[in-house]
Length: 318
Image (cartoon, rainbow, N blue to C red; front, side, top):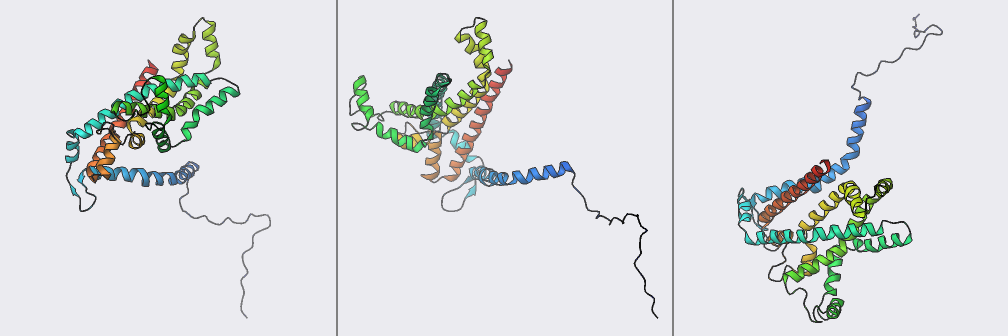
């Protein structure tokens, strides 16, 4: 006769034994939050890596090579950069770009600031004018350039009629006959196209200023100019810095408007830096040299933007 064993029993009221847990590592609450943050940011990080970091590294690598469109490339070191220093076409393009930037930046800033003060009111009329001034912003740069190219056509566009009535020319006046007139016409188009965006940015900065400060300044006897200079302008400085950086960066990277409206003419008089990079890379097919020009422009743009922010920060603390 076999003897059977029964499972061990526990006395009534005794808690059941807890099974042993695995000895694997466990993340703390802070670690789980950090892991969740990494997972949430990883899609954006992947996009930035694929479409910015890798092309940036590739551009610097190409700038150190003689890289034709067809055929093998070979390493040349800093030869492309030494060539750019003595390239008269590149230096002329840089000079014209700086000239355009110096011309358009204060005009945009002053016009946008004036419009921001004009529409900084309550009521339907102010909102209607905000929409009206902002309307050109929704038009693409290429579409706006083609529109103004049509408006300026000799004998066809309405600018010829306006010039006749103002005594500035006749119906057959070619507004792109000289580099100066072409630059001025492109600048007018850019002001019409871009001012609305800068107006909205400055308007948001104006509306963020407490009204009590302006009231206190008026009670103390300050006029409009003193109120603007000592109250509005210091509090508006961060917004002005943002608008200024956007304006300078956009001017240094100007390409569409000159490519469409002037074609770089006459006599290559309106070739910008980006336009020259385009010609070097995709017309002359010197991809390595074009990459070197792009790297130089990018470094210059980063330096100018950093200098602007540094100067504005120092003036803010002074």
